Image (cartoon, rainbow, N blue to C red; front, side, top):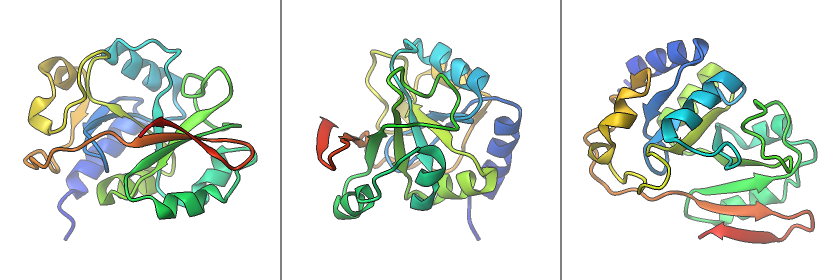
Length: 190
């Protein structure tokens, strides 16, 4: 029996109401919401005290979902992602179907295909992408474990996932690359 089904149900209720939640990902603990709901995304920017010019990462459950949210994806990026061992976020050109405040002013979006069972399950049940940004106020160190998350962040969300709160394995943010039109990559964060 999966130990996070109650958390999934509670997150689904929050997502449907346009709320935000605190959850474990395949990297660090994150703040999440419906990536297609601009009002929900604005709540995350407000809680993080983050400039809306700085984009947020979006999680998808499956590789096949990229074609729904990118106008002309170069699917050779999937070969690249299969070859890397660290969770990697890719900045793609031609974002579609997201809230306008998720899409960068240059038309790009940062997407990570999650390999985390909880995140995959939640996204598949919700049938939409979710935001995944570090659970910290901008300018402060992203929390490597749940106990490092500040009270300000915890008090600012509509739900805190119970799953993996006791996991003390330090986590790190994902690598970030830009997938260029010529099939090359530019490393943004190793």
